[in-house]
Length: 186
Image (cartoon, rainbow, N blue to C red; front, side):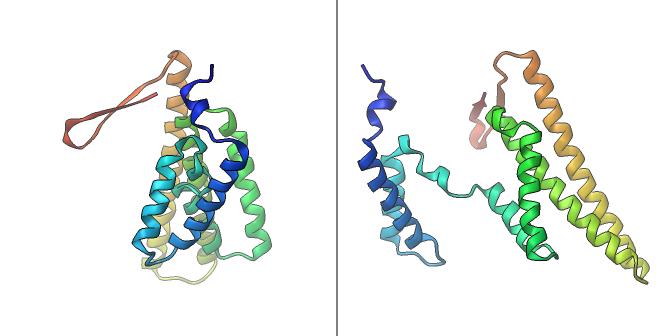
């Protein structure tokens, strides 16, 4: 007998029709002022087909941030393309694919911080070769230090979570939400 989740998954042909409708609605709503009925239809489609996880085909905020940072970097297109693969390799080397969801989020954050740090370090090196004002020098020193702190903090957090999860069968985080409600993440 199929489980409730298996029973809610449509047959492959129907699932493909739903995915096509999702892409169509996403195209219609992916603009500055979409029609409210299109937004509602997209919401209803997502809500009515949770088992298909249609939302997974869209960039997450972290992935979009990574893409935006890479696109806005001062480098030629070929180098930027190589950086995308370097980031993917870095995530893989950090164990992203086999990690629990919380670690995956932290790995993505650490790789994003690494990219930001690398870009700030590059700009810092370029600026410091020139004759600059003391104010500009202090600005770049602070910017570099902040990027280094973010990267270090992201790596330390990942290491802490990994250490805790090794010693605990089911690691659970309790997060206080607005209104005193508690959210449990495992």
